[in-house]
Image (cartoon, rainbow over the protein chains, first blue to last red):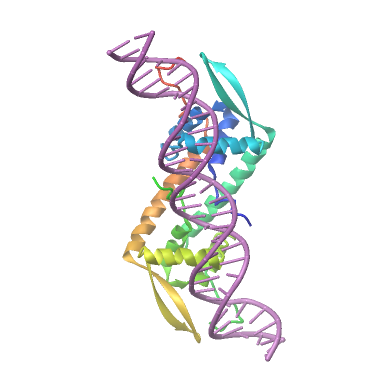
Length: 119
Length: 119
DNA sequence: AAACATATATAGATTATATATATATCTTAT
DNA sequence: ATAAGATATATATATAATCTATATATGTTT
C-alpha cells in the first residue's frame, strides 16, 4: 500500500472551501486560517503545488476572471472533486474516530497472545 | 518551522498505550490494530524505528524480561514521555477541532480583502 | 527436521508538506 | 511619477513521517 497519508490532507480542506464557492488561491489561504483559528496557515508555496495537483487529478478546474481591475485565477470544484470530497471526508471521520478510540483507551482490544504460544 | 507534522503522529498513540502498561513491540501493534478497528495496522518495520526514536528522545526506556520462556524487550514510559503525551494530546485536540471547523464550514471566517484593495 | 509464526532490526523509497526564491501587478506614500 | 510594500501566482529543493523490503533469530507445530 502506498502511503496515501494518515487521515487528512490539506486537499480535503480545500475541496470543502470550493464546495461553497469558487475561490482564488490567496482567498483560500485567508479563509482556511480564519476558520481554523490559525491552525492552518498555508504559505503560498505550500498551496499552489497542491492546487496544481488537484487540477491534474481533475478535482478542480480553473478560469480567469477580471475582478475589480485585476485578473485572478479562480478554482472551481468538478464532479470528480465532489466525489473526492465525500470520500476524503468519510476517511477523515473514520481516522479521527480511531484515534479517539485509542486515546480513550483502556480495556477493549488488549493483546492476548494466541493459544499456540504459551506466553 | 520544520514540518513537525500535522496533528498526530503514531508516537502519540504509542505513548498512550504505554501510559497504561509496559509493552513490547508486537503487543503494541496488535493492541493498536484492535483498538482502532484496524485503522492502524503498523508493520514491524514502521514501529521499531519510531520506538528507537522515542527512546533516543528519552520518552521511553527499555528493559528485557523473560516471559514464558522467551526474552522480550519491554518499553516503559518515562517522566518526559508523560509530558510528551500531554502535549501531543492537546495538539491533536486542537488540530482535530480546527478540521471540524473547516468541515462544518459556511459563513464565519470568510475572506474579505482588506480596505486598501478595492476588490 | 521442515514449515511457520513471533519478534526485533535496518536501509532505502515514498509522500505530503515546508522553505526559499522568483516574478508580476496593484496600491499607497512620498 | 516613483519607490516601497502588499497581493497573487509559480517552481525547485528540502524535510519529516511513515512505508516497503529485507534480514535474522528464536520458538512452535507438524
